[in-house]
Length: 557
Image 1: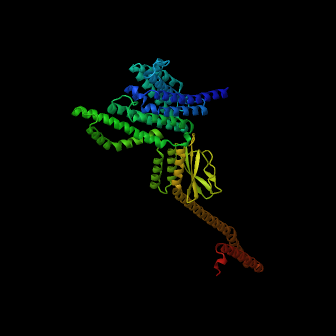
Image 2: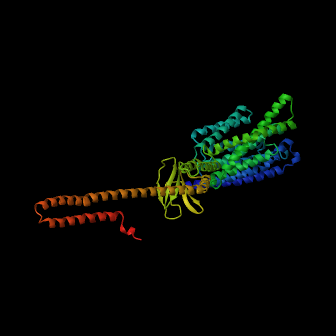
Image 3: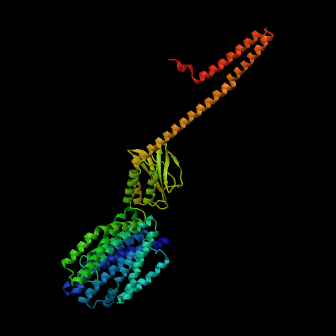
């Protein structure tokens, strides 16, 4: 059943591509069959304008991208919305050609009144799909919560009332569209790295479209005296091209967003697009203010341009810096840009060269720059990798890793780890842990930091090895002192229990000998022999102790 539905949906998507192409061909043929000399100047501006000429470009782009999304993501409503934008734009252009031919050449064409009626309002439908439903449903085809579906009838009714000239309807339509874009911003704040990358692609193209539209409206009001961008030179070309870019970004975001990095483009679009809008506002304020002060100032008066140029020249750089910081905050959130992370890392390295805090600061910069849950700096010492520092402190994980070769061993429990080398020698590693998958920009930043950290870890390892040598020297000295104390106690024990006891016994025997000599001189000889033996034993004991303190071999030449 699911397979049959997929085939049916895929077939409908392909049919929409063919139908869109056929309608554009038919519409252009019908317009070509109407001589331009018969068409009124007002209608000729529409029929023969660049907007109509370029509309097949963005319509076919939308329907083609939509068919690809339907084929590869069958459950994603974005594909059907894109197909609807392209197909309904082709319907409008066919109706325009049909109505023009019927109005100026053959009034007997069937259903001419119905086509003219359809032409009045049908163009609104692809606009609503593009400006409201795309941001509401992007990128997975669902709003961020079911309650956001309540905006759909508000927008449809609002634009419907606006067609009848009811201004409240236009206000409701604009409010609903703005809320749909707010929902996209909320989705971005809640999203993981993959979905954020998708939204960045779409937001980049949407920002370009907004810049073109706002600039066209300002130019229409103050230069062309027209309230729409459709008939304004330059903008009747730029707007269809911006629509095409929106369609292309939609396809990249949903299908191939991993292949490209959009952060730089998005930041620059935010900065310079906002500058364009601010310059337009400055121009408007200057013209109105100067005109009210010194009288009516023509809009094409050079004085207005000079005044605006002076104001922009003075304010451009400070405004650009503030907008750059704002754009960085919107794109990267609270963390710094990759360039700022590298700059901050280099600055901290120079401030704390060979300091004990340096690995900790390295781990902190690494964690903050990659939005990681934790970051670890590993240092090679001998045949093992040691955990030099972690951020935040106390992060889980082993303290050492065995190292058998010059290649980085696998580190469990981390999102990504890169070796740190200096002149080809493995010095350590940088590792980060994240719940989400690492983006391409974060992986590149991790690699750049590892290259910057090579010389730093070289010095840190030398310091660690020196500390290890000092610890070993201290331990060796302690062993010598302990050995000396042990030998001293042994000598004291031997003197007390050996030679000292023999001498005490010898003394007692001499005293006994004296007593015997006075009473009976016969046993004196035997007693003297015994005393001689005791004296020789005591002397031998002392000699052994002396040889232990200073062996005779040391005295030989």
